[in-house]
Length: 326
Image 1 (tube, rainbow, N blue to C red):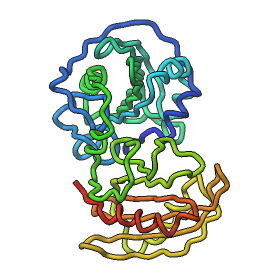
Image 2 (image 1 turned 60 degrees about the vertical axis):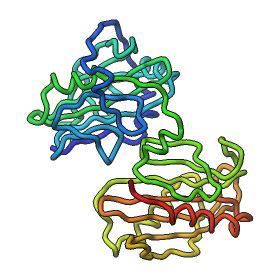
Image 3 (image 1 turned 90 degrees about the vertical axis):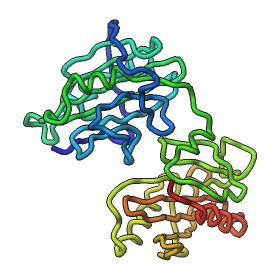
Image 4 (image 1 turned 135 degrees about the horizontal axis):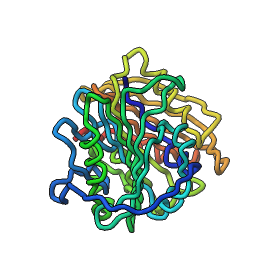
């Protein structure tokens, strides 16, 4: 059966669940020098030879399918709240039927709770032919939510359990290190600078002195890579428009230009639109450019106040034109 991941809103959704725990120590089989760290992640693992770093999410997946492990990182202060808020009922709604839970001691004395069970059947019936594990990790500087799943014939319980409990935790990566680990390269920043890298596949840039941008006092540019089946040529305009309209921080979109083009042997699609920024109520101009790759795409979304459009649109384009796959 296909593997089903928790939703993208898992970190927030799990805060509605509840948990009680005791104390047990488990060995950490992976040594630091053996651990493999997903790009930008502070959590490393010693995966079996059948599992490799995923290009679709932060974690690992089995070559040919059948098993996966994904990592979500949260601030250190999130762990106590998560630990107090897990319940079997809520975890079931998030895709895990809990069969057992146990407190564990992890790398460097980090605290954790390991849940073992099965995926929640989509129809509420039947016996899923897969096992599922959920480990929450509370270290001094970071919290981790680690989700793993394997079809019964793919990986053994011992292998998957060892991979989770052998988690290694490294120090915080610098922003430069996180940007260098992205799957794409920016050759021309045009005055923009990165202020945050996310999930190992995206970066937030701004032009101006502030790292925290409110009320669009500075223009922002977000660039992210997604790995998926290639989008057919005839569907790209619709795909681009749907991606733009899915932005929940803006409304009242008016598309001024929507066009596909080919540049340096690569297919692109660009939209320029007017919109209203919901938090501030200000009129804005949005530039969305998508670079289509054989295994997915890179999407760049620049947002600026309407009165800055003449200055900012060419700068957004300079950055986008310099994007290269690593």
